[in-house]
Image (tube, rainbow, N blue to C red; front, side, top):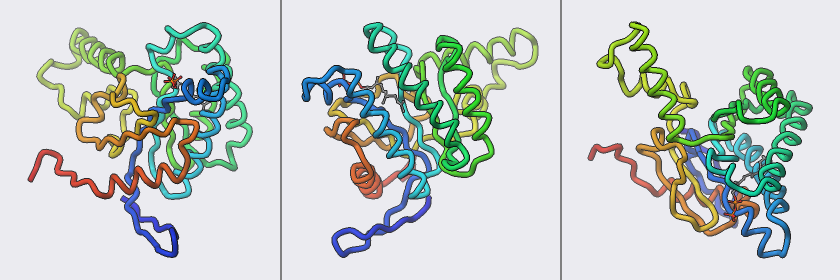
Length: 246
Ligand code: FPP
């Protein structure tokens, strides 16, 4: 864990920054509705909120930031809304690729990208490959991601190894199973944040969150900024993590 200090009201607060924070970027639709705007306007401001948080995460020395941008269940939404989110992702990735060397942010993608447009798949691949050597925060972007789907895929992959005679069922360990997930090599999230007042986990990082601390806030995602992230980190600093010990 890294320490960072911020001048706040004449007082310097030292806070330990967790290694890995994960966020469910929820509440874009309600944010727009409250203003009489179409839901897609909320996603647009939500994308800006993400950009601000990713830069802030880098500035405070966070190592991993995992964000839920589109779930395996989100396809059930109106075609128009799904298309708008996909367009936003495409535009965002295009800009990201352009500004890549300045950003130094490493991008990874968790989820089944094969259902995305060929253009989006190509941009995601290019972003991941070009940023692989950067040393800033690692952003794990979850698109067409569902934790149950992730676990099923890992189980199938191991079953296939057994069927091919390369492994025995008894060989499987927790660490071995973790390595079959999209998040292979990434430490489990220390803190999972859900804005927008919903108190549920919605199929996000079910395996990886075994000992994560949760933080729920009523703030809607488009209004979530560095101050709200500081508050979540401050709350995390008050928690006593025992990982099942005493
Ligand atoms: C949840 O809010 C949000 C989503 C399903 C999409 C999240 C997408 C973005 C933040 C934009 C894409 C990101 C980038 C960086 C291009 P909701 O629609 O479920 O809101 P509601 O619960 O108020 O209806």
